[in-house]
Amino acid sequence: MYIIELLILISLAGFRYRVGGDSLAYEDDYQNLPTFSELIKYGFSDLPYQPLWYILNALTKSVSKNFFFFQLIHAIIINSCIFVFINKYCIHRFTFIVFYFIFLYPYFNFEILRESIAVVIFLFAFPLIQEKKYLRYYLLNILSFLFHPSALFLFIVPILYFLFKSNTNFLKLFFVGIIIILFSSIIVTTLIDHLPLNMFILAKLEGYTSLEININGIIVGLFNLLPVMGILYLLKKIPINNPNINVILSIYFILTLLSFIVEGSYRLLNYFSIFFYVILTDYIIYDIGKIYNAIKIYRKGVYKGLQLFILLCIFINKGYYYTRDMSMYNYGEEAYFYNRYIPYNSIFYPTKDYRRENIYFNFMDK
Image (cartoon, rainbow, N blue to C red; front, side, top):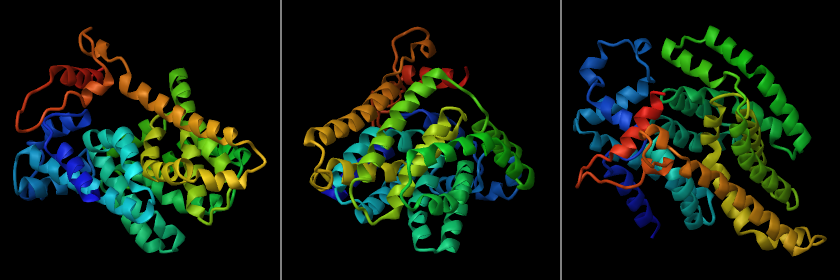
């Protein structure tokens, strides 16, 4: 059954026809990307994307110039890596797949095609920190960075790991978060000045670290922050001999806090989202009895209420994300963000959905 689910998800992403957001632009660019023979003539410093992205595209173009083949290979890589990871580290894997399909699958498979490859590489790099296999960790991080520049953040994760591997409190998290907010732009500017990065990557990194306070962003961010706080609180009530969990939740908390003010930092949450939903599935959905026994001094309803609150915040946040009004990008005609993915069109009946095309390209041109 697990393999069947994997094949279904690979097929949905691999056999789609112009379904998604960023993938529409990637499809339009595909024919113009260099082949292996053409790559020799280019200097990677002159190209807007990372080297391994071009090499992967050149590899698939050597088999087929149809973007369908690339997206099929991409779907196989992303979903196979996630399923292998989940099979090893998640106890209740079928429940996790439900969360993955609703909350992460469209984004990883139809949107952030470059970054999602960097994310799944990090899935196998992160456990190496606990094993103190730093050379392998950084080699995998270099691979991630060669697909997407946001992976530059992963090079400081071992420092954060040792900072948060023991139990922590919200005051410490807020304090570290404030320090990161104050110094993130300075740190990134220093790295930019000393690393041999091309102008396209420099522009991206500068955009990701620019300061911007947005009231709507803060409200949405709260629905990301509150579930993490609730989970951290509950997990303090039970003995868990796994420092990775505290590290992941602490970093997730700080990055969410950072996203209130630092534009683009929300993207760094992508690297920890799979881990977050594994923790949510195994410890918050299924470990009710263990947690209840550990907090017997409270009424069972208190835990039940907090569990419901955590799930409610997550669904409200994602519900808002999918149902945002996009009519202003569709020439005033009714359109919502979920129209990037619905209706679904396959390569067997290739039909352009102009509402989807409008809300993506007009949004990007705003």
